[in-house]
Image 1 (spheres, helix red, strand yellow):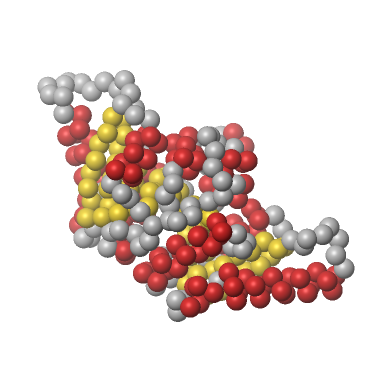
Image 2 (tube, rainbow, N blue to C red):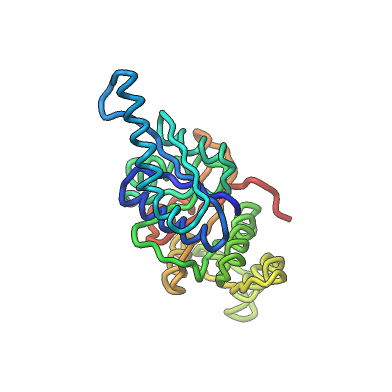
Length: 283
């Protein structure tokens, strides 16, 4: 991971996102790109007034909002563009060649919907072509334990690979979790723990490239829970610093990418969450 983009707007949420970004960037030696979508406080300013306001915003972005990154000795770039924040942030992250986009968590809610979490974070979850980190206020740093959801799908195995790269770079423990939903029957059943043994064996096999590279991976199977509830519970009980899940392939209603499990976690978890889109094949 060479470049981390972070959306900044002067809010407490974006400040928390930057602090998390700085800690990770220092650890792995990445550059930081701060992105701001500019809009004026009134509808139709004069052209010269608009230029002045934009210049002042750029100075504020570089001096104040990106200050902690510069003070940490990181390579820092800034982008300020006119337009809808959802378009500006994703376009700028792509143009910068970012490997990760970091956004602050704004608000909370009981379920998916652009008005619950903040339109930028949820829009990015559905449409970003790169991993997206959503960071709550008071997020733990540094990263020492990562929980990743795995179900054997290509999308989840890509999330596992991404989490493994971060775990290796940060020398973190990786807990690979598969959660079986209620009423799933395992046959044949010679003992009550057969299902756990089989699932954890599969997790171990999927994680073998990571363990072979020196990453500490703990396989963990759970059942009779919704996958989102199981992952959130494991993250809490294991005192995780980061949760990673994959999103499903692009398609379906309004070309929304993030599936039900990812969105449920996004709206309920109080820890940093990274959503990894299906951008490449995993063997």
